Length: 305
Image (tube, rainbow, N blue to C red; front, side, top):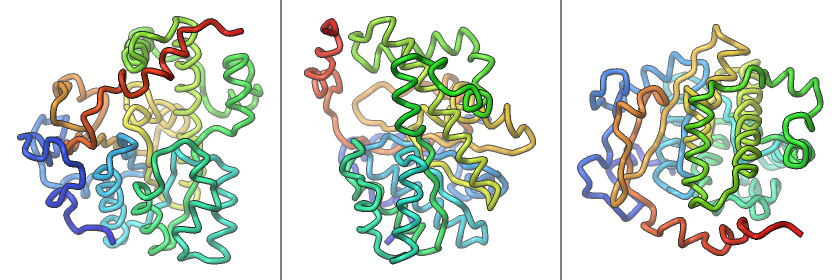
């Protein structure tokens, strides 16, 4: 059951009393706005891009609330998910054809446990909305075989026709690429080599372009909502770049759900080129990611055999 107002009943424990918690900002005006303002803008968009922190339950509750409200207001939407490939999309469709309301069975059909994502219960509200209103779900992740080629050979490892369809050229502007590289280094606690950072940038670009491709595929039937990490929905570097290249006549709205409570929050002036709206929520945990993933990060420093 989707709450009618998730921001009045936070699930994440840290920072509930933070002055920013629950605030929704229109970045163009730097003003706090009501959720109805966001809904009004979203109702007129071809693509609504909802950027999350994957393990924050409130982000998924807010995504489900927005999707539900849009549909109830007569704005039926397809759902594109970063967490699924097109092959998993097909497996999910087969399961839904047999038992369209078995939301628990959806996870088994796509082998959610084996995908490396946070637990399925966090994403269940979105699948529940899709089941309730019979909304199509599309996989936006690049196919496993293409991801393997990309990791081994970089962009040239992808089939030429795929590179062309995804509109990967020209590259992102140098200043944007440099900013993303700095974020990757920081996100990996300084343990990623320059070679690894370059490879990660290529993967990020292809994933963004693949998500845009799935949105355009979904849009052949109806407007679409994207469920993805906040970095993917950035207007200056993410999915909107590739939507603009391939369908400049379409309108995309980028929304980021960002955590507060214990960590520095980027100023709105910095976020304005990236997102149309920013919705602040409490934090799911206060673990230092550099300590949390220390063992995995240390492995990155070791030379490959």
